[in-house]
Each structure stands twice: as C-alpha cells, then as structure tokens.
Length: 228
Image (tube, rainbow, N blue to C red; front, side, top):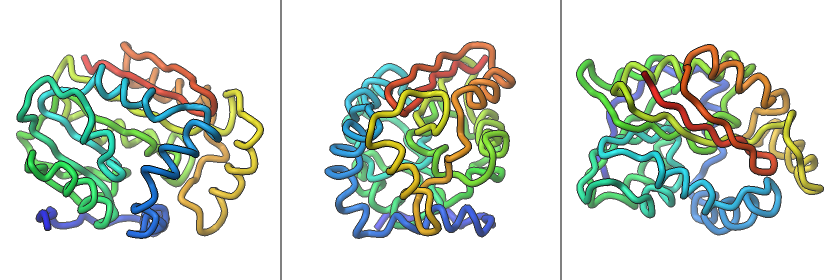
C-alpha cells in the first residue's frame, strides 16, 4: 500500500461527497461510469477526456480527484518517468489510483480541495487535472471555483490546468441526462451540480485566467487553462 500524506481538516459536506466512492463502486467505475454513463448519458466518451490528458499533461503532474487512475495509466506523458502527485479526500480512491501507477511512485495527499492544499512550499507542477471533479463538490460554482485558487500557486508559469465537469444548465442534454442528474444529486448521491451552469463556470474561470478554452460535449464541459 502506498503511503498517504496526513489529512488536512475537511468540511462535513465535502466528506459526504467523497463517501460514495466505496471499493465496490470503484471496482465497476471504469466499465460502468467511464464506459457506459459518460458516452450514453452525458454524451462525452472517455476517449475524449483521454485526448485532453494527452494534449495537456506535463512531466510534473498533479491530479485532483484521480478516480481509479484509468486516465493516468493511459495518458501520454512527455517522459517515461513523470513526477506524479494525487489528491483526494477518499483514501480508497488514492490507493486505487496510486496502485494503478505505482511504478511511477506517486505521492498521495488526502486533502479537501476546497481548502488550502498544503503540498509543500517548493512543490510546483507543469500540469493539473480536475477530471470529473467539480460536479462532485458542494456549494455554488463560486464556492467550487476556489479549487482554482488553491491549486494555482503550485503551477509553474506556462503550466496547464485542465479538466471536465457535468453541468446542469447551458448544455444540451440527451434524453437520459435529466433523470440521471436528479438521481445522482439525491441525499446519498455523489454529485452536487443541479445549479451548475456553463455561464457560471466560464465566469469563474475568466475571472481568474486570461488564457483558457471551454468545449462542450453533451452534458459536459471540458476546460483547458494556461497559467501565466
């Protein structure tokens, strides 16, 4: 088992959002969520997100909410020996994703991304991924977007922040998406995004960065940011 850095305090609602990702859910995540739900419900195949990784991932990479590590295992890093750090509040997620890329010896941090990350004063990365993370965070988009404030100090000038999120408003949903949004936002569901809109996401990113791009694929927005 890969060692995890000590946990920082987390808000109860953030802990609740991380709780649904049990070992049972993680064991079916690649097949069910990435292989079925993403293309058929959200209208965004996992290969689209993998291409985003391939375009943006750097030699020193930080992954917030790494899931099972499916993307990390397949991403086209610019070196055979990338330096990786994984951040999640769920220990099971960290061990699952970290184990999948154990040969790269990732550092694991159990952290609340809506609080200061405390990764080390001199730590810097060429890229940061937030893939399918924001729609799991509690609060308004303005509150969720503080994740950008917490991660930007760790990004080298010219580095990339990229990711994807399912939105409720401002995107074109397929016929299965509205019911899925309702079910996944119930009291025990992993998502907190019924008020998330494309306009609000763009406004929060534009208020922090000058160089960015947002592409919509079905119910999902994929964003790419260059930090200046």
